[in-house]
Image (cartoon, rainbow, N blue to C red; front, side, top):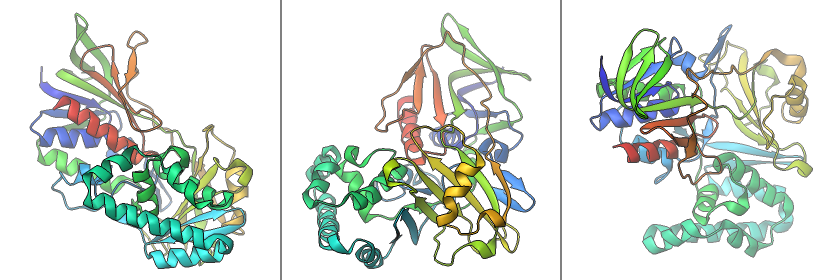
Length: 411
């Protein structure tokens, strides 16, 4: 019977990250993946020349000290993803703001859309810049900024409801927290640092992780899902598949966990407005400020994503109630962003549901491992050395925090 320090059931982004880090540290690791390929594990969808991937494309955490940069500086492979973005857009019911890497351009946008309060807004950004400089120079200032609420800082500027919602949407999207619950450190990141972008979702990053994992001597078995976990006197002993039994010191069940309803659309290129950014946060209704869309569109003439004359359009609905919606719930509200969209949709399909390869017995109890996020992703179980990771690409920054927590606990 082969023996491993760690067996991971599931080749999602989180499982791959744990595997690469653990094997790089000298642990003997194997990944068991029920899907036939990495694309199947990640929910990649190919259709008539269109290529879609699960998970968000735009994310925070790649800045210095962020969860992504902390994890991926340890890998040796050439960094193919992510990449910094030049701009993204926040569309409110009555205005649209392009947030640019050039902060002067962002301020020009804010001046146009919020002329009556631009002095307060510019002072807020100016003071955030000063706080950022203080933190870089002082560890004490950095410590207090992590424990100080952003709401106290924002409250000094008497900003309008509309501008506050502009910030709130970004806070909910990038950090999965309302603005009132952000730390001052996170607010600085929000206002002073551009996010990064995955090309084709997390597919390129997963390739990089798998390459690094294999270079470090890790094993991966596609088409071999977990069938049973065996215990001896309440202690983890082995993990069984339909083909074999593997002795394992520890097991991580990397369970697909998609919270956000997503639709994949193939659309004609000529319907895309010239002024539209590749990534848009769109709020249709001020009265429902916690329910907004994330819209991601492929680049013009990107034939790796769509045939010539066409684009991929991925739409997710960020909402407290993450139930699946009808197609009209997605298409109709987008008319203000992409006029004539309905007449130019070539096809529209919900993202595939990735089924976990293993389900825990009801007698096994889960306990969340402390997390800084709103939604815990990492759990230990009532069985020693058996863990579960909710492997979600909806929350990439929180996922990397969970990965770091698991690795720190098990090295």
